[in-house]
Length: 180
Image (cartoon, rainbow, N blue to C red; front, side):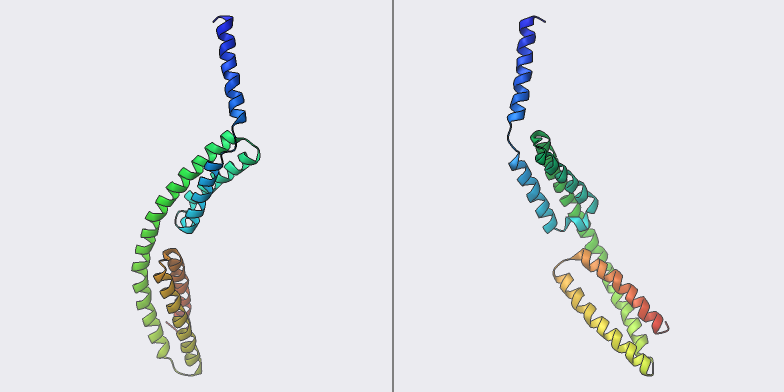
């Protein structure tokens, strides 16, 4: 390679480094990643696809770190990666949300049937302790009904599933206390 070709190539490389160093902050990419995170939170992606959400959030945090260090090229790359990861997490969340809804659709009738049996057993009890247990069970059922209806109408399937799991444990306790 001639000296002139070598100097020309070196000049081109130096210009590229200067151009990269002069590039401004990737505010558009950062804003896009921040908006993608906000949309994911709104859609409860963190509940239905937590691992995917955490990966996207970590990538966004990396972009923020690069921005703070004025490493704009790396910040832009990380922000773009975060947007793609949030999109992927959102798609996984849609699938998981539907699966959770199906689980709830199966678990809720089974729980209600079981609760009917438990409350029937409680009502057959005699004496003051049985009446107190029946009142407690009735208050539990009333409160649970309100919560189930609210979550069902809001389509909060994850929260509904968690409530059903908790309600099953409470039902076990009632069944045990009722002697069944």
